[in-house]
Image (cartoon, rainbow over all chains, first blue to last red):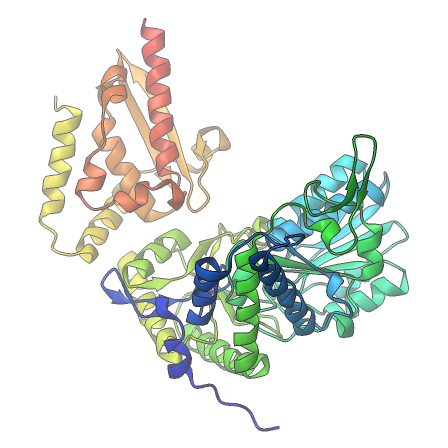
Amino acid sequence: MVKTELNIEQIRKDFPILHQEVNGKPLVYFDNAASTQKPKVVIDRVADYYSNEHSNIHRGVHSLSAAATEEYELSRKTVQAHFNAKFDHEIVFNKGTTDGINLVANGFAKSFLKEGDEVLVSELEHHSNIVPWQMACEQTGAKLKVIPITDSGEWIMEEFHNLLSDRTKIIAVNHVSNALGTMNPITDVIEAAHSKGIPVLLDGAQAVPHMAVDVQALDCDFYVMSGHKLFGPTGVGVLYGKEEWLNKLPPYQGGGDMIKTVSFEKTTYNELPFKFEAGTPNIAGVIGLKTAIDYVNEIGLDAIADYEQELLEYGTEKLSQIEGLKIYGTAKNKASVISFLLDGIHPYDAGTILDKLGIAVRTGHHCTQPVMTRFGIPGTVRASFAFYNTKEEIDALYEGLLRVKKMFS
Amino acid sequence: MMSINERQDELIEEFSMFDDWMEKYEYIIDMGKDVSGLTEELKSDDYLVRGCQSRVWLIPAQENGILQFQADSDAIITKGIVGMVVRVLNNSSADEILKSDLYFVDKIGLKEHLSPTRSNGLVSMIKKIKTYALAYSAKAI
């Protein structure tokens, strides 16, 4: 197959925010794992929606409401197609990944978990895929079990298999690690889980910007993601759930839109997906997300993945030249994330100086304190690349780090 | 003895000789390295001021109505700024500390480090110093 070469110069023109100076230096934005920037088409779509199309959706008799509803539901179909879900009612819009995990964890606490049951997560999880399950366990007396990781930041699969038991009621793990970039062997996990009838939730927050995800091919039971990490607006996300699971889960929040009938004696709930969409949703966000997905697909996720791997290889090779720099997360399969420390230099110090040089990286524990504890470090500096980043920007990071080293030596 | 504001003005004066941010940060880093810091056993959770990005330890002491703080941080830049805050506030009475306004941070161009969003422990440390001062001042009455 011939690789599609991306025209990065052209792509960068689509992102207005990239063309600015920060602290007098051209911005180098390497904090994409925290949030990605928005192409102009997305910004325009949201502005246009508010300027010309806004109205509350569903049940409106007037034209504006009907048109807004249509756009909102069209976005659902786009998301369905993008992730290859079987039905559009398997797509639930929400605030984001955290919201989606909380919905499922709450439902499991209410309906499926009891004392002695187990929930399996991994040592690599973001706090948002730990805490909701801890809360569910506290409520029900279930136990949280953890798949440990190797020094390279990969799950110890033997341990995973040992941890699976009749008591395991759900496995909730990330597709790609936000702290280290590890692409996890989720197909093996799903296969092993399903052989024991255990459902699997995948936290896809860090996967969706980097690769095409097919939920039917993966056969996962739940998949959660955030729009803002996929070049879309903040405050909007998606929970995919297999129809049978979403039907089994109780509603998460009560309110408008999620009901069929309400009386003081008894309320009946709406069908999927509205059962899980209480209240007026982030309509503009949902509509903007459709534009973001269309934009990404126009460029092509396979081409994006290829280019990002090129950046990852280049960056890994370049940063490894710096004496005293240690990369955390050296898995064979990685997304374009490099987490590292300079010997004896605190990540806050490094991040502060890089910021002065116009380079935006994330420093700290990246909401994965167990990972940092595992490696015995306070945190890392994390440079995460998107397809609008360039090798020249990686060179700027390299130069910046040399300067950091000099300043703190 | 110099007042809090005199000590702040002295620091502002010291920083006025730097032309760019690099020199300023190099000076802060040097100060961070010079701060004697706390021994490992004193860096305990009892004295820890939690910050997400960097951690600060603060130990208060009081003698004859005069407060003395010892502080440390795991990040050098934070440690340098912590050292300046302690230099400005030490040798003052609880009341002087309670009334103080730390304008020097802004004046020397380090305001960003005092933003709560930085979560480097500095804001919490200053709050904690004032809480200690309040406690000592209440005891004095």
